[in-house]
Length: 127
Image (cartoon, rainbow, N blue to C red; front, side, top):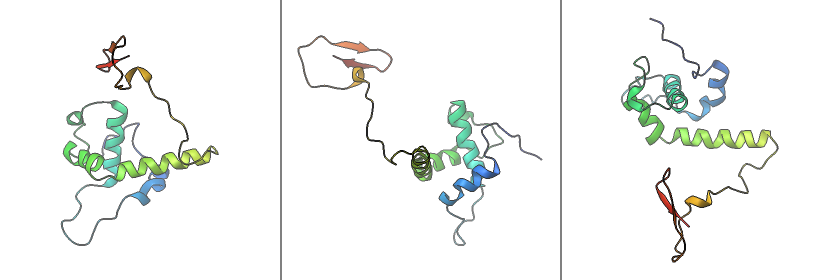
């Protein structure tokens, strides 16, 4: 049976670009039961759709397995860092940003006695 394809699925060239970040299956221990490409397709689906983990369509691996690779394994965070660095370099920038933007209305402060507001969207007080 053919698996349904989604717009967020990796194509072959994208897979070649990132496959170096994923460890090959070990010869010892329990054999891997899931294809890492399907794990990535599942993660990209969740990130694009913005749906809860438990709403992952049934033609993907189980949401628990996908969540483990996303949250616990650390590979996705490493992949994101390397891809971000590569994109920055491709645009002629330094790997690491030298500036950042902070939403000053959401910054915590220890100064008291001033007029204080409340950001209901972020549930924080601001001054």
